[in-house]
Length: 124
Image (cartoon, rainbow, N blue to C red):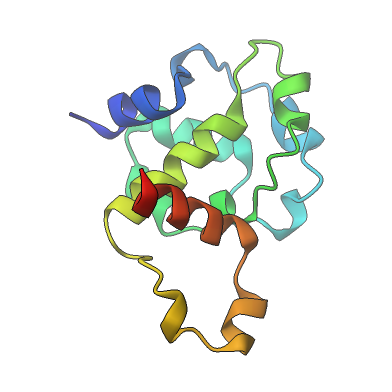
């Protein structure tokens, strides 16, 4: 199964209907902190360049505020796609988190969504 299929299966969303209008990126309040815009993430998925996304910080920065989804003229729920990307990365066991081994300083720096995604992976 290819990455686009995995993303579709996990998120229930199809990235193929995106025509790259860029509204999702302009609506994102955290775009300034991301190394890839939501529009770029969708395009890279369409092109099959998932490794570029997996090595980025974008899907960890996404706060799932739903601004992108609300503004999307194609009604693509990008927050679900970002969660799917988190799950794919965690399933590769690159970000397996053992809370007992994390210091208080590390916990303070870690994006909360990383902990939530890890708990979903280890308890599902």
